[in-house]
Length: 316
Image 1 (cartoon, rainbow, N blue to C red):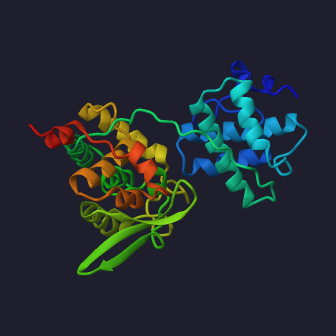
Image 2: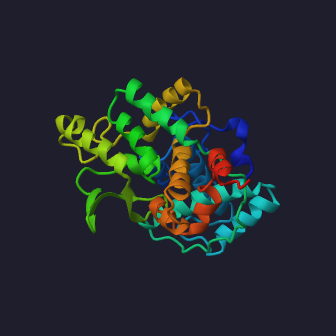
């Protein structure tokens, strides 16, 4: 089978919902995986991850194997093929492997498959992405309160700066199982139990300003509508609100306040940076607040001092 021919970009179809390119001829399992991803991931991630899953399946087929019975070294061999034969960049390979690993993890709960050996990829060091200043977040919150009236997107947007959850994680919180109260000394904390990006269930804290927002939502709009829905932030029908729906309203706010770099992930980086440099929490604590498995990810990609924080620390 001509693997390269199966991935002729000029003939690549597009996802009906996202409009993004997808790998041709999804298998039955990849099609189900795509449906699974749509519930929690952005359109771009859905496209990238299903492309990666289909690419790995196509590679296995070209070698005379199936996803269920491929050799344990197949994923390592595939990575070598991508680098040596396709001249894929390290970042592209890392994205492909992330999608394949996610697919294999999801598939292993539904099908008996080979325990594929995971490749050891070099860590990709890159310039930290944009992190907004506190003043920009203040303008963002003010704009959301004034201009966004549509619930539950409004509350999700207001909670993002006050918790370490990804937008996909916060959208999938349930009304009864996800909200916890923890008493530490004289203080009662609100926490969220969420399934993180890696598939693990972790309990992450909500900062006090976020508690006020959450309580207003629970005793206001949420108490009056969608009473039969299990989701904290219900969407259409029986589903939770979609991350892309929340992003649509965020884009409106971003244009209004003139902040082109503002995104759900930029707000998450603000949360990490603010908790470390302003609130004084150490890296280990911030890492746990974000649900990271190691502090390296937190240090490399999230804790990024803003210009104002650098200036304040300069000794003259």
